[in-house]
Image (cartoon, rainbow, N blue to C red; front, side):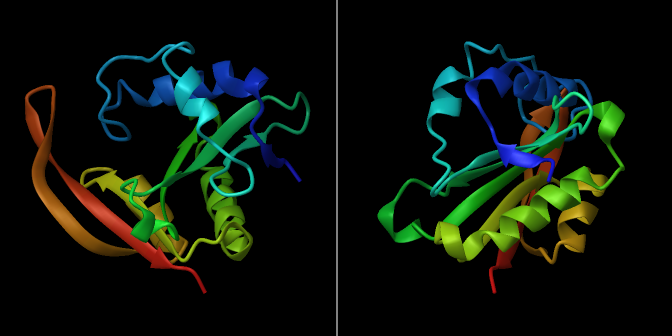
Length: 165
């Protein structure tokens, strides 16, 4: 299976995939690229047993082509079974089912990880990501109108959710 737990050596590829999404202004609220050093502490917060960071790797060279993160939601104990999902796929690997495969993998592991609720926060103008989550069974649970500003344009944030079976 091409999905595995991310290793420290994967961080440069993870950051590169993330940074590829910055210029499009659809997948992240960051407006400038981040560095590997910027993401060291972020990476260290992941725990394969409870809050994993998984990578989907190219079969030939094992290089990450996409990644999925599960992070604790809101940082309070009452939300211990709720996670925020992030999914990013390298531009050259998009529209090949990698994002959907990563999401399916996360949903299959919900019970083992103690997760009952998945949340995704997606810009309202990011139709491909909204469709990706909808295909995985996520539904729109809320909308925060015009809460982000990207290049002078105010953007909505859609809250997508799914209760694990």
